[in-house]
Amino acid sequence: MLELYHAGLTTCSKKARLCLAEKGLDYVSHYMKLRDFEHHRPEYLALNPNGVVPTLLHDGQVIIESTFINEYLDEVFPDPPLKPTDPAGRARMRGWGKMADEYGLAAVRIPTWTRTKTDSIGALRDAGELDAVIARIPLQDHRDKYRQISEEGFSEKEFADAYAKMDFVYARAEEALADGPWLVGEQFTLADINLLPFIDQFGKYRPELLDPANHPRTADWHGRAMARPAVIKTYSPSDEAPGRPPQSASAA
Amino acid sequence: MLELYHAGLTTCSKKARLCLAEKGLDYVSHYMKLRDFEHHRPEYLALNPNGVVPTLLHDGQVIIESTFINEYLDEVFPDPPLKPTDPAGRARMRGWGKMADEYGLAAVRIPTWTRTKTDSIGALRDAGELDAVIARIPLQDHRDKYRQISEEGFSEKEFADAYAKMDFVYARAEEALADGPWLVGEQFTLADINLLPFIDQFGKYRPELLDPANHPRTADWHGRAMARPAVIKTYSPSDEAPGRPPQSASAA
Image 1 (cartoon, each protein chain N blue to C red):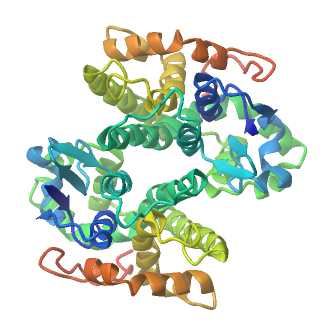
Image 2 (cartoon, each protein chain N blue to C red):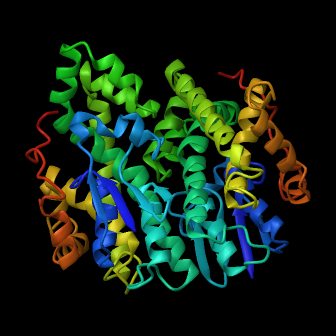
């Protein structure tokens, strides 16, 4: 049996949910309310010591980190295959997973956490509960960011760095897609699944990035990816994945 | 034929060189002089657009990123196997690769770049050549760090963050080794290969970390790893891997 702890329409949860959907796998869905800090509660930390979503349970095994959850799913449920058959293609695919983690996630957090966490963290601060909540967060970088949101917010430099990372991800995707139609060539792979939430979300914050005049191949790739039935299902609000706050970065 | 572009005894080059040594693979060695910024020259950027080492060439294929080079090597040359046979073990192994990249490398750069690059970057600045050298660096984070080294150096906060990351890596290794003897259990894997240069280098900067009184399992693991013939060969200065500047973090 498969169980997924996830936060619905957030970027890393969409990665794992899309991989499951592309493979047509059924799973027990555990929706975590990030606004209530459910991912920092002891019972969840016992599964995922980093206190982040998603986490996959499969036959008693706990798998964490969405990029590795997806590679695990492809190894255990190889139909349809979402990894290239050649080792060099798999190395390139893994490079996109790293790009999603180190550039995509790092960049999206700055506007997204500002937009989605400012109110709830402010309420905690006003209630005198913030210190206790922050003390339960396992990752120092996350503790620091919660603290920042409760005080001055992210700096102009942090927003500028995040926007530069968005530009970099788009530039690299545009280059790679010269050998498309997908990021690693002919085959739709985990590279596409893992990068899509970031390309999509960056395009919501900065529509000029998705303008075909600026990134013609990436805009085309995004359109083709978003039209896949599994993507439509995974990216749409549902009981499993409730809608999120409005898509504006203007909270900055 | 295998060819490796690398920088000898630097952390990420040691990862790939150790994997090759554990497998007993011969390769053509191309030593890159980082002090002369050879990794930012156009002919190298044509192979590795990030301008970082190492890069593997194999039968016309270019493989970048040491973590993925090692997984590639294990897939193409599976003897001896350096990946767990079960998918959940491989997911954990990949988690250590991510730990090495996102915590290990991020932390080691602060003291190491201060120690190894301050003089050469200062000389470039004094010669009026720094702007041109920085302009050739593909990764913005690296451009920013070169600029910082040429000016005020890394901040106290950046050193504190790096030291906190070192603590985190040691704490997680210590926990995992309760189920040892290696990071993913019974088998010596790419997890051990990929984390070793960071545990080892952090221990040089901060000997208390490797004190068995503080991290008994990690100190034992480090001792066992460093005694492996392939590690002795890979980590020792040689024609392929010239010695580096003295191991002090006091340049901070």
